[in-house]
Length: 351
Image (cartoon, rainbow, N blue to C red; front, side):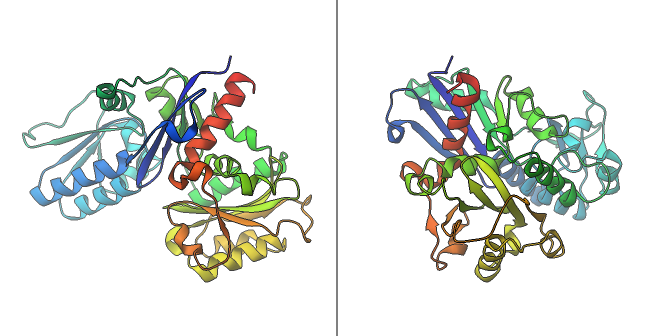
């Protein structure tokens, strides 16, 4: 049965974007929030601890690293200790030996540091439903049972290149046919440990990666969706990753993934043009410190796929490239949430 209310949370490096969808309600009238992500919030607290010379203790769940990991790295370099429980330590690296090598002290679950009266204890997680419920309660808004969450999950990589491992998962997906609906999970594969951690904090949640959530959201933009038949190129310029995809119908025929911090307008247009031409190689993206590229043999370059649409918080990189800026329901920041709602209604309600 299709849920009548869905809480969609798109967790990025800078923000967590929240949409509470209700059946029968105009999309523009639904409750929407753009809040700091938990990794950003915890990073601020670690930076304050560094200024005060306080030791830090992370306990909780695996979550997205990014800002908080960079803050802890600076904290350790400043000479202050960081204690972590094994589960929280996975935020830093999948291999706990590599976490120790980076200067962290790993304690057992339930154990606390001794002789640290000024210790700053932080609870790690990507999603806090109780905090959202408390924030919404004064407005008479409750959190529904149906929850969908997008997080960027590299997959568990104990040895070797994390970039190569993540992109190998992408390549295998395209080789299996590239059905976009297959990128959303009620039970994520074992390698997606961050998605599994989300489901521990939000039991029963539908989960997917942030890139695919944005792609589904782009299809909620009427102009972009009008090009599904002949195919088009969709680009999500996120705060951390830039994902460019060849989409026809609901099938992904090829893609590249790079780091946004290394992206320039010239590089972006070159990547898009080479993807369109079917000429982009995995090596040229990986050797440029990106994740990689792969194009299905089923893709034939031609007059199709000429339309390019862009979304994402760093879309300004494409401001002068002549691409169409997708804004489903007039709200670019909620693109991933719109995608989460669409997918959840289909896989939970069978729409």
